[in-house]
Length: 159
Ligand SMILES: CC(C)(COP(=O)(O)OP(=O)(O)OC[C@H]1O[C@@H](n2cnc3c(N)ncnc32)[C@H](O)[C@@H]1OP(=O)(O)O)[C@@H](O)C(=O)NCCC(=O)NCCS
View 1 (cartoon, helix red, strand yellow):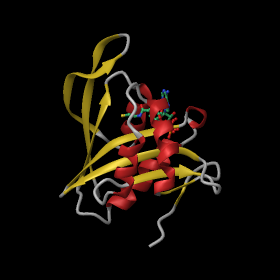
View 2 (cartoon, helix red, strand yellow; view 1 turned 180 degrees about the vertical axis):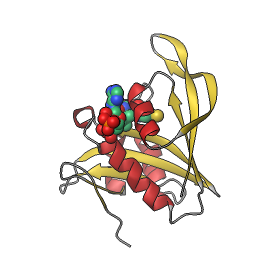
View 3 (cartoon, helix red, strand yellow; view 1 turned 90 degrees about the vertical axis):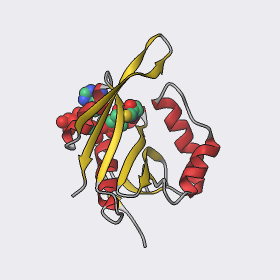
View 4 (cartoon, rainbow, N blue to C red; view 1 turned 60 degrees about the vertical axis):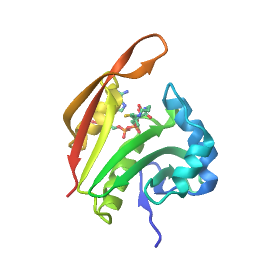
């Protein structure tokens, strides 16, 4: 089955393929203090329970990606990152909307995520999408230049 969701600026969202692993690894490293190895992303892309989505153009230049973990009737947003050049253009929103639609094909009824309490961009994105705070984990995210940051745990029911 072909899965494809339209996104702004001529981009679209679709499931990642193994050849996307390099671009996703680079993008993730730009978005987070601690990067993950290419092999990890390659395994996630290949895995049944960890769907990965990319926002890209027709030549498959990747502007952003998101990854889920599925576990029975719950799902977790493991990570999402948009290329710094593509931020604030609706790419994050388009990725999230695509994965909400895809989650309707799974048994998942609730989507959880963790976000650093000082991540204004992500908090704005998740707030717009109806996520509510359900908990917090102090000292969760290591920071290069100071004390570790608090993680907020957020959740949203899937319709
Ligand atoms: C968080 C992130 C994925 C958002 O992606 P994005 O494509 O820029 O988001 P969108 O353009 O779809 O914006 C969604 C909303 O958030 C707002 N927003 C985006 N960046 C913002 C910022 N830096 N400050 C305040 N609001 C911001 C947008 O204005 C928009 O709201 P609006 O429609 O009311 O204007 C992106 O900033 C990113 O990759 N950050 C680094 C990685 C990261 O922190 N991931 C989340 C980990 S939990």
